[in-house]
Length: 221
Ligand SMILES: N[C@@H](CCC(=O)N[C@@H](CS)C(=O)NCC(=O)O)C(=O)O
Image (tube, rainbow, N blue to C red):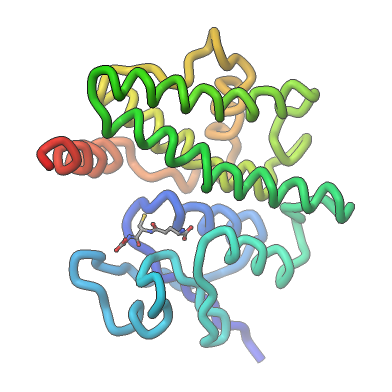
């Protein structure tokens, strides 16, 4: 039976991008279904009734939601071009870093962009505390978080590159600077220049306009 793979996604969602990158790296053909998040479709609400968010992967009609869980599913379903190490301990550690990224690093960086003045300075110190752990992880001699090649953790951290870079430019604040985080900056460059990632990168002007609107709505509240 031919497989049916569909991805419900919206524009350059950093969470949806994870799934696009993983499917492309595995060489999986899929159909893209564009969702309007300002007017959520019955399809999205049916398949992700709890969170009502994109991305949703539909594999032979079955929905899988939450991007880190979708990445796991992709890895377990299509074994080619592994995104996780074979060793159970190393796999557990990869899952730890991906979760740490979403639970701690991502919110701490968002705060830097949505706060102002003294609160913003405090948020930057908080974010640096978290980013320090990523820098230390790379100091163990790795080119990518996945080792010599891009893996699940790199894909999970992709938002650092496509979101933080744009936000830094919009707001004129450097959060990930080369003096403090040389290895992280090198990783950002290597990651964004690797073929599958580069080929599936959202246009910069689209990102700029989305995040400019986002910042405006945060700061007008
Ligand atoms: N934890 C979710 C986050 C997904 C998420 O926040 N998606 C955004 C788009 S980037 C969304 O669907 N927002 C719609 C909403 O919050 O109503 C994941 O990893 O998949």
